Each structure stands twice: as C-alpha cells, then as structure tokens.
Image 1: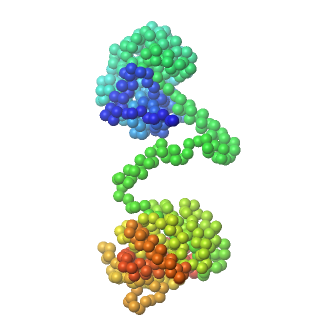
Image 2: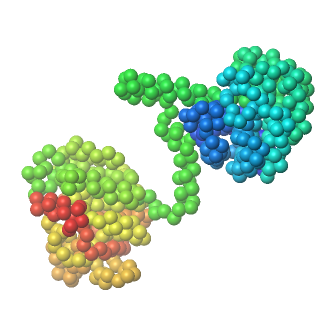
Image 3: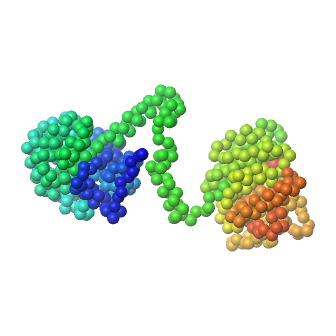
Length: 551
C-alpha cells in the first residue's frame, strides 16, 4: 500500500508545522523537491516536510550550485511549490544570498509565500557546493554570520518561522571544537536549530557532534555521503530531523536519461510507454480535477452539450465527387465539410460528438468523434439514422444535418436559448442557401427582428408550401437543440414512431410535426441568413466562398 499523506493540523501554519518537526521527540524526515510537481509528489508520498535544495533548484534551472540562479528566481519557484502543498517547506538558503541586508529581505519574501523556514550556511557568498573541494572553501566570520541570523529573526513576520544555522566547519577541514564553537554562537544569536554537515562516508563526525551538543537545540543532519548508516543510529544520537537532500532530482535525471536514450535509439515510444507515468497521472498531479470542480462552482457555464450529426447519405446530386467518400467528407475550402462542423462544435465547448455514418463510413477519418452506423442507410430516412444514435443521447444535445455550413454565432446563440426543444429557422426568405428541397417552417409569429428575443413556437414543417398553415415564416435549416424535458419527448416520440409501418421513410420534419401534434412546445430561434447546405455540384464553389467570408 502506498504511504498516505500525513494528517495536517488545519489550524497550524506551515511554520508551526516545521517547528513541531524540529521539536518532535521522535526522529523526523523531510524530502528534497525542486519544483511544484516534485513537491506535490513528496507530500503525496507521506513526507511531513520538504527540503527546497539549493543543488536541486539550481540543477532544474540548468545552472551550477554557486548562486548562479538569483534568489528571486529561487523564491519564484518556491511560490509554485508552496501553492500546491500543505506541508512546510524549508529552503536551503545557501549563505543568505549576501550580507545581513539581503538576509532581511529574503526572510520577508519567504514569509509572504508561506515558506516555513530557511537554512543558511556559514560560508562566504557566492557559495560553492560543499562537496566540490569543500576543504578549500573559506568560512565566514562568526560574528558576521551571527549578524545574519539576528537580522533574519528580526525580519520575520511569523513568530514560528525557523532559521537553521548550517555549520560547514567539518566540510572545510576544521575540527569538532570549531564546529561546536560556531554552533554555540549561532544558537545564542537566535538560530532555531543547528545543521551539522559532513562529507565523510560514515557518520562518526556527526555522531560525535551530537554527543557533545547534547540537545541544546534541535539538530539536523544531511546523510548524503553516509547514506548506508542505519537510521536507528540517528535516533540513538538524538538527531531531530533528517534531510534526504537531493534524491528526487537525481532520480528524475536518471529516468530522463534512460527514456530519452531509448526513444532516440529505437525511434519509437512503444518500448517505454509502459515504464513512464501516464498523461492522466500528470493531470492528477497538476490538480486538473480540482479545476473542473472549481469551474462548476464559480463559472456560470452552459451545461455541457453533446452533438449528433446525421451523415449517412452519399449525396444523390454529387455522384462525381462521392464515389469514394460520403458527402460530409467533401473538401470545402481545403477542409472536409465534417471537419468544419466539428471545429464549430469545438469553438462552443462541445467535445462529445457522435456522427451517424452510412455510405463509405470507412472514409470518415476524423479524430475526436464517435461513429455509429446506419447499416440500412440506402433504404431508410433521417429519423432511422437519429434512432441509431440513441445510445449517445444526452440531456443537452445539438442535432443537425452533416451538410451544413453556418456562421459561428448561429450555434452560439442556439446554446444560449433556454427552451427544451428549439429549432433554428431562417426568416430571410432567401433562396441562395437552399439547393435541395426547402423545409418550410410555419411558426406562431413571424420574425420581427427586434432587439429582444421573441417567444415563437413551431406549428408545422413541410417540404412543400402548406396552404392550410398560411405563409411560411422561414426555412428550418436542419439544426435543433434538445434538452431536459425535450429529451424525454424525443425518446417517447421515436418509440411510438418506430411502431409505424412507414418509420424507415420518416424524416426529422416528420418527427417535429408529430411532437407538435402531441402538444409539445417547440420553440423557434430565428436567424437571418448566414448559412447554407451542400447538396449539388453548384454548392461546392458557393460553399468555398462562404468559408472565405465572401458569401
């Protein structure tokens, strides 16, 4: 079982948490992290705190651990790390990035970002990593270093912010006496804990220091060189906190080198995909789920709609162009007609798209869609195709013919309409957008083209002018929206109509007329041009002009 994150006292600040770790009566551990994602992994692994390692932070920037990354760059990265975690971060603050004045500003800026503490070392600025010719690195004057500690303590705005003094005497070749002398001075200057550092492969120096220090203040160690020492040795010596100081960055480098070499060598991802984290895992570490929840809480978004596109036909008047593809795959202005439809859906945040295919369905090679087949497309009508897609029905869906082109606002405005069943009707009475049989729409009111939206209901749809219904109010363009209760009407209507002998010949207008006959309220959303369909050869050039905005 994977370790669980620690139980964090919600009332405790991050600085209080770090202070508790330092004062704990049991040995505690914190882990190195160097950016937001490694910090989150450290927390999820169960660690109670994070060591923002100077070596690791400089390495992830690709520079040397010699103060080549500025303190502001380091603090900027710390802000990301702090924002994604609830456990305390202890910064490896090198030498404090300068003199006492730099230390004062650093502590203020760390406090503003909820960083729990900083560890500073008693070497001269700019520093060099302790394990690179450490014995040749001069130490700073004791009084000067004590001044940095005092300046930091005087500048902290959180009483629990911790300053840890790191003693480099043993690294620089001094003896235990010098290390203890410095530790006592730093403790008196206000350091909240002492970090004793050693480059030996065994812990003898550290244990000797701990015995002499005798618990005068919390003691911290970094067993990078003496990593094989049993942890029980540290417990018996009275160590307060162990820092695993650079292992996340080293592990990531090893993994990246291995994976990049394999990809380069084999020119393929097949051999490594099972070895690396999934994309979903990355999304999880980035907090994608939290963002989705926040969007639901804070954004007044439209309900996520789905789309069903009826695209089973070949296109009777386009034989020369559709021998090897359905009408919806014809290129219009350099892009398949269906691709243009899908792009319009995507613009409106509609990502679940089902295409009912039939003729040459295998030629539909567009990603990001689901395809269902109307295998009887040659002998059935539009309503049969719609029935084929019933498993894709949703509580909010757009249903449309696959041969439509329209300006983006047409779909956007339809999505803003509140009705449960809404059809789009062009009131312009223009004929240049219709090459096939027009679907005349008879409505309760004509389009007054007023600023405020009318409440209009559909009365009838017909391919021919129906004298009994008066003058047509416009033409249904082949686009409708069904949501909420309208979804129930649709299900019930299809269930009833499927029992009729002529079901296979029925059209979407037949469905609309049946619903009206049953007293269902179908709202009308008027537009005034700005669309066309593709039914004949003459439509191809006209459609290309439309996509260029010249029609």
